[in-house]
Image (cartoon, rainbow, N blue to C red; front, side, top):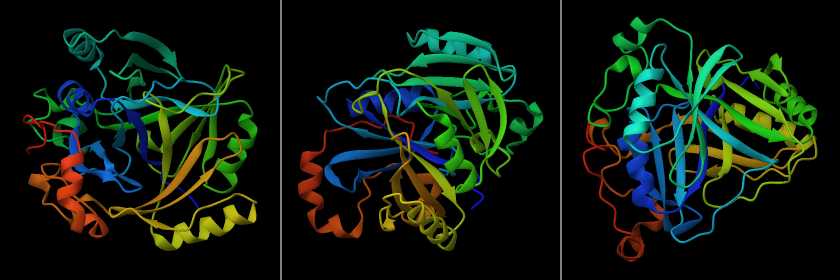
Length: 323
C-alpha cells in the first residue's frame, strides 16, 4: 500500500452544540454530515471538513454529553493539526482571541510556525502554516468551506489537516508499520519527533511520531478516538488487510460506514488505526448545497428514525451548514 495520507481523525466531544459552534463558527469548517454513531445510534456523529468533505480535510466527533474528560498521554493521537496558508497567523491569533481562546505560538518545528490551543472539551489543536503559493488559495485550488462558515478571505482559511502528533513509547514499532505496510516514508527527525510522509501532495499526507515516556492516555471527552488512513479503493484495502493479518494484528472485517468502507486495528503502541476508502464520499445522500442540514441515517436505522430523533439532543445549525 502507498497511502495518500490521513483520511480523517475522530475525537470525542461533550456538549454537541458547543462542538458544532466551535468548529463551524470559530474555525470555519463546514458541517458536511450530521449522522449517528453507527455502533451507538443514540449519539451523534458530526463530520467537519471542506466544502464536500474531501479526504484529508475531515475531523469527526462523537458528542457524549455528560461523559467524563479524558487525559492525553502515550498511546494516543495527542494533537490534531490543521493547515493554514502563509501569512495567516496574525488573522488566526486575533480570531481565536476574539472567541476567548488562548493560543500559544510555536516557532520553527520542521520550519513551520504554528498556533497551539484547546477546543471547548480540551482537545489539543494546532494551526500550522504550510508553504505554498497564496495565489493557489485565492484561485480555489484548495476546496474551501461554504462561504457562510467563516466570512474571511480564502487565503487565510483552514485548507485541511496537517501532520498530527502520535505520542508513543516505542516509535520504531509504529514507524515500521507505517513504512512497511502503509507505505509512508521517513523524511525528517527533530529532537524526539519523527516525520513520515505518504504519497499525497498536501499537508495531510504527513504524520509525526513523538517518542514519550508519559503515562498512557485515557480515551474520553477531549481526546482522539482513532485516526484513519486513506485507501484508494476496496481492492487496496483488502490487500493491506491481508498484510496486517499476516503480521499477527487483530483486524476487523470490512465495515460499511455509508460514506466509506473501513477496517480497524490497534498498532503496536495501542493507537486505534482505521483504513478508510476515499469513496463513495458524502454526496451520495445529499447535494453539495445541503450537506449537513438534515440528520442522515444508514438504511438499517431508518425504521427507528422517530425514536432516534427523540433521544438525540436538540441542536441549532445557525448558518454554517448552508452553502
